[in-house]
Image (cartoon, rainbow, N blue to C red; front, side, top):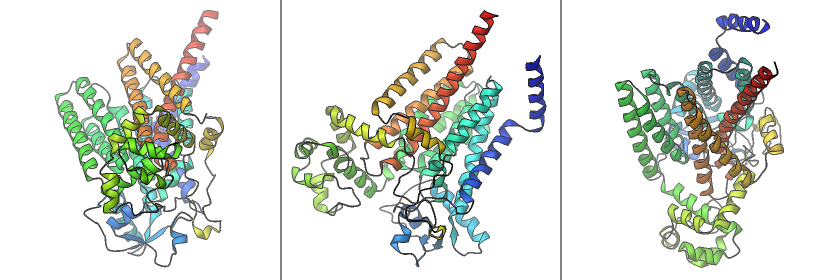
Length: 490
């Protein structure tokens, strides 16, 4: 009787307040207060801002010194300048579109004065809220107990609004674009994986998926999984138009992967190769000369061990270095080396695993200088999830290997024994999230140890999504067991 009354009260409340509307609004308001309340929180420039500001016509205030621009403090305002887009090193990113929208809004609000980066932050918050909306809309469709539904929301609030993720919103890094477009892609996917999806929503899915791929070069592996899911969706859909849209979307995804890879600035590719060898493979090497020989590189360059692309004692873009290093090595030779040297592979995995519990670099400040705090001050507000991960998660490669082995075993087991189509589709999405996480881990493995925490950003997000799904599954199993045991005892 009490259960019926509670259910009636719930229905009465939801008649006035729709679950998928009120929750995103609360999330948006929470992050708005989190980031925009004085003193505002963001991420200082480590030099990566140049990729975007040079193309959109922005620059740091001329009155600022390098001490104030890089690493130590965030800067809310930027001056407008002439775009300096170099065709050789042009950087293609969907983030540019969001920045240009923010610039237009800033010019309207501030009457063509300086650009206010918090406007870009608000745009990210809105897209984030839209992603939460679609996730909540999908949750409403599944047969999930009311208490579990709100447990999921509380976990999402703790995980996805952690300051380690949201602090990037008030910055010109590519991470926040990847973050919000990933959540939005996932949210829409949960709503289109059915026999007859909404046509407009299906087209929106591929638009957002393309924005996700173009957010950062490192997102290319995600496109591979999205393509595989598209092949699955072609077989799933009954509507001919949906099949055609999906086929076109799959072709666009593959074409985009090729475009992003081919258009990647040469300088970025060179930096990644340099770091993967000298700040990666050689870092734990007992015989760097021998390792370089096996990579096909002159052993005399072993003296560069421990240096990164930005602090190398030599000109890494010189013709000589290109002849003796870049012409001898590529991504495939790095992969081959790791496969032939499992000890090196495990040691690098261990370094990455230790860094994976921290979602913010500790050398990038979160506050404006006007806040009166020391340089490189890090905000600990709203960081409960990160604190819990650092305290309770094993900082070991074995942990992640064991976790993902069990994760995929559960996904495959549940998929084979389930007769409910909707459940099978949800499990396929769970599997796709796990594969994306592993691919992102491997991408970081190929980038070396320099800036590893920042490079792990998307892996950590995907891992958290997979963990949320795992917790939901466990809670549902416990609920079923308790109900079964209660029935037996009764």
